Length: 304
Image (cartoon, helix red, strand yellow):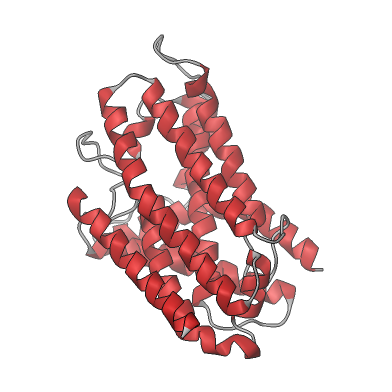
């Protein structure tokens, strides 16, 4: 039953991940007093892009063409690793969270290399910023997972999440909430959300992620946008599994709770973007270093 539930979770992630963008945009619209876009707008955009052709500059090589495909494949691989609450992932093995981190890093590397392949100064600038912020974000993610692995005495994501809120692991609560707070900051950074980046901006000098995909269009841009939705689902699932302090004891019950938490996190992201302004670029590393400090505090709590 758990294997079937894990497969269903992957299918739901593939189908429902663009819906998270609709929730975020609708929450932001409500705060601004507007009606807002349809909840399914991201689906419409992806379908429209899939019907268009792609135009490639004479400067670009096969690296630029393969970037969106390889990036999407790496994100889907990561989706197959993550658990859904207490339900293990389909690709579950010892040390799988390291593979997940490397797969996410590969996605970023491919996007950065494809941006630099265009020869554009603007896209190179965005790639430089993306690489700078990701260095700290990856450390926070890996240290947070390692902290939970030490506390639960498991080195797989499935084992960590199934034991995290068990009776024997209840003393891990404070450390788990600290890791969840740090992971929220990583989620905002990795998904280029406010206060790190504004996905709706059109000012090249202030863009981070969006400037790297300026030259992509048609099917390539559809793959990129779909990959962004899957990445948001991935980090939301990881965060919900840590932040929700209980398990139902049944596979489908845990999955339902986790998916509800994912939608709640989308609402939270919309609230954060409605109540905060974008940080200056010099302050983003400081925020990530604060998240790293919180993660170190969680590790010290485990080792006390």
